[in-house]
Length: 186
Image 1 (cartoon, one colour):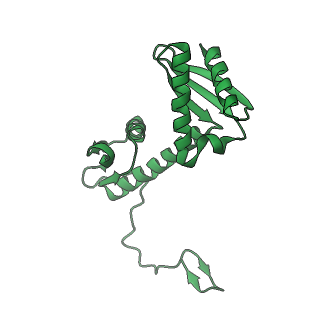
Image 2 (spheres, rainbow, N blue to C red):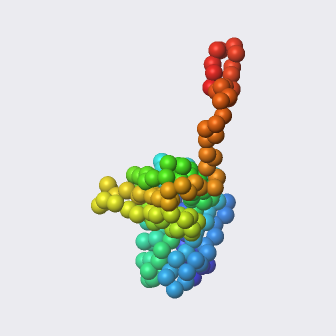
Image 3 (cartoon, one colour):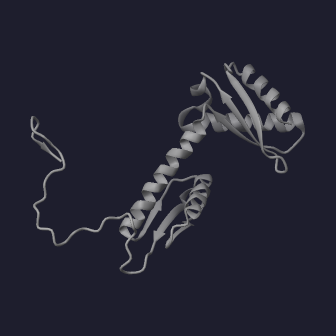
């Protein structure tokens, strides 16, 4: 099946006029029909588009063509020049910063404008981290649905990596950096 998917995918992209340096198809779950098609190409801008919108449409078309040709129900993940991997890494860094913020304020924060897939990834990522007193839940319906992160540690508990201010210090505050020529103090 992997060879057939790779051959049909190669033909699909060639007919689109995309230059292919390398194309592989990997089975991720044969029972569920989940495959990863990984393509290396100098035409990545053409395939990815703005915010990955073209990539989603291309993936949809490729999936429908593969399903019709192979007469099987398939779920195809399309990876172009490691775009999705880089996008996921950036998303997880964003989640880490939001987790740290929620822990710092010991409260609840909202992450709006996430797709249902991103909310699912966020729930999974945060639950895998197994952070004590951290809860995630979604609120709302349809496009207005939001992800909430709630950190509710017992009173007096401070997360290990959040520094506590030294209230006994009487040292004057100094700027962290100065730029003398411009007269800028930060």
